[in-house]
Image (cartoon, rainbow, N blue to C red):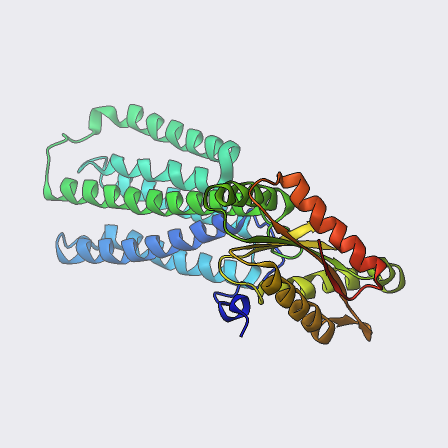
Length: 349
């Protein structure tokens, strides 16, 4: 069995990338609803069992029910902005209710620090700024008005629990946000190096990989092969059947290619209907065998509107003294020979 095909493993299936900037906001909304539900249930129970304060606990349980209703509404309608505003309104209502009931005592004022991260993360910089600012002004006005009547700030069990709960809330919120931020950056990086239609490497990423592989080749002097794969008569597919069929052909060919390479190989969309396959530690004979296998598999499996799709492949073995442009030029010359030879064939430089 061909050593190249025998090492085929860790298949990657291409996919069509869809950038969804609201995905992380939706994830944060769902996490906040879960956090509020759990916190409200636990704190409400503590207020009943430890302090026998049904009045404060009733607001905790109201908050728990609000989280359930907001989650139900969002799941039913999908209105992210509406659900975000409702969540912020529920948080503000509960914060002020608790502060009023506690009369500003037991370090209850510290709960107001929970609002800014929620408002900014869900509503964005502008709306979050206005909502947080208005809430702070309202609280400061209340404190100034009630200053003569505010209780002393003696540290108590209730104060300890309030501080503990707020710190835990901040930890959970920022931990989720940081995870979401890291995922967003990873997604941006992936989008920058991935062809949106096929899910394979784009040309910029292939250029980077090729430069790295050539530097590696110069140090170790191992066999290395470059393949250019071109879909035959692709313009006819677009002209006769439309670009939607053309896109489907590109995706199907990309799927065959990605499912027929080793973990050490790199395949990507070079441009238009051309794909580039980089095969390190592969000699010319093995590469030609692989290329013919790919060509036959595409002919068997890829079609559109009852039209069989074929490819022409140019193969070039590269040595360590060859610049990148010459390596690609050799593969391109081989591909041109395959086109001249009637297409649906493999030629090597």
